Length: 102
Image 1 (tube, rainbow, N blue to C red):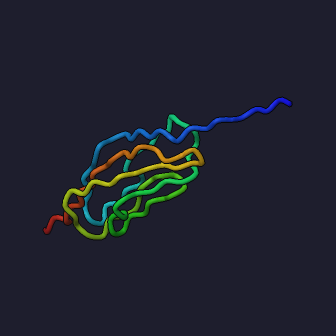
Image 2: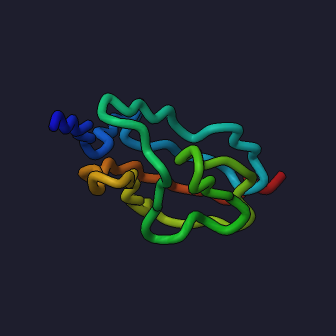
């Protein structure tokens, strides 16, 4: 009896930048680019929650939107998961500055 197994590995994430600064009400189409060099991810997670007005897509790992309030530099951890496990976290810092008064 021949039995074959397909072994899978957890995702291995890389991120295109370490952080960014945006302004309140500045549209952010994609805050960064994620690259997965491991097996495909089933889902992604971010911690802490995305800034007010921004959306984290758990199926792609992308963060986009329009920040609605200022925040000091906050570091977010992003992970990917599949049946074999969870990737090591990659981090991305976001600062949201207030709109300049005229």
